[in-house]
Image (cartoon, rainbow, N blue to C red; front, top):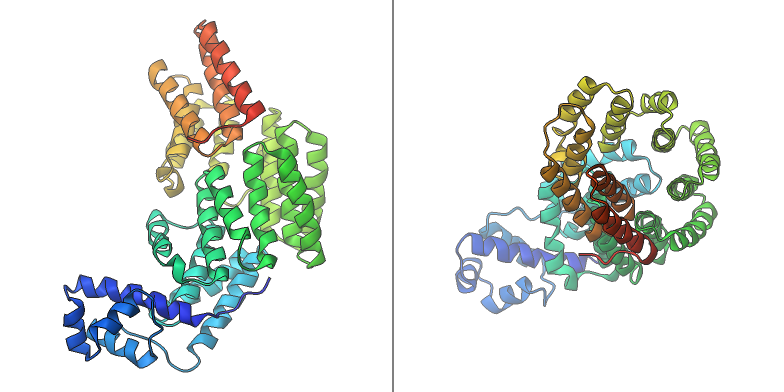
Length: 424
């Protein structure tokens, strides 16, 4: 998968959007700006609408009046190309720590590249990094929405990346159904070599939605593709997704075999991300089986303090009936940025605290949180979440001897599992 900085004409058209934004910001009409720049208001209007590709000097004159720095010096595109290619290559090969080094260098030159003919490619590689590493902020996500306003001016390859990035952002926010739609849009245009990378993430969405047949068929295809391209790291990641599917249907032995295979590869070639993911799945399997000692052993090996880290840590404390530690873990977890910005994660932690003796949450509030979380699961067609939530709902009703409500909830989740979920 190779991508190059190209279609600068598209980027030049998008610079027209920046001109319009800053013209209005400075309370200038088209005729005002025309007078100040000695450029016809008709030409400026066509530049803003992306109807014409402006000359570099024309852009420079307009930017000067708007007090913006326009950069188009010799070798700018070539210098940017180095960052673009290196970051892209490292991300595709799952070398996120190394990618961060080049990404940080790129960001130091943000003003330079953002106001230049490579504005589109700069935006693409910046947000591609942020969504793949799941470090995008709400503010960043909102800024990327500007892409929707300029899609018509992009090349097919640029549109493909825009859809892919949008899908990754939705997937990171647990909206698997919506993410899958954007992934499919991305695969209908652009570079076919990128399709397998998109399909890799589509596999994960299918698994969360319990579309196991589709997930396994796609996974097997992309494993062959990645190995043919000598990208064994991503092929191993696809195998881990298959292992996850096996865990969900309680085929633990088959899952363990796949994880062991990936782990041996990751250790041999020191692939830190894969080692971490394997330890995550080892921990998940053992805690699922209430194997506290092994679960705790693998949890100690986890290095990324993400929501799964705290989720497992809380489970371990609850299995030990160490409620004091559980409360401390809960308080630490809900302070994390990725929890505070996610209503889903906040609800999950609140619901878990019902298992702690002395934690104050009324039955009414508890049930309300469960159904709110279920609605979020329905929106994303997240069957993994829904099965867990409905198990708690059914257990709650049975504990209150509300057997009719328990039966209704049981029938509802059975229908979801057999026929799928209609997203809200």
